[in-house]
Length: 124
Image (tube, rainbow, N blue to C red; front, side, top):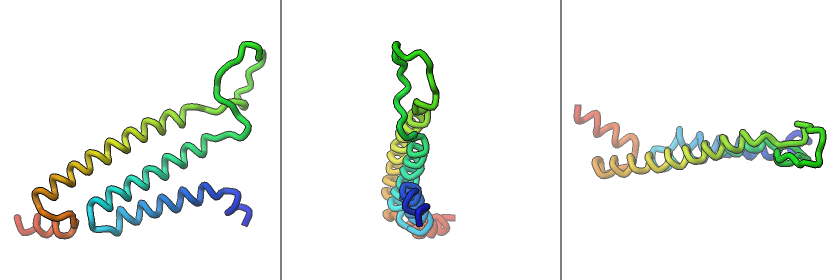
């Protein structure tokens, strides 16, 4: 029980990932699939940011009065910077996917994946 309570943030990330994964696999509406992908990506970003956390650590700024530098006292900023880049990519992917979905709707008059596949099969 202590493992579940002590690592509650990981359970939240796993739950978010499964919600996003379910939306991508089970939903037939393309917008719901894209939103599911966005939820999945957000869960991964939150996971990486939480794994970079150190208790009682500080930002890596050196103070002149400090003589000995102990790396264990500092938080590594690299995962946070990489996740900022991932957020930009996630938002860009979301925007492009929505633009493609708008074009699909204009052409096929539906957002249902199965209906679009049937229309494409009939065209062949």
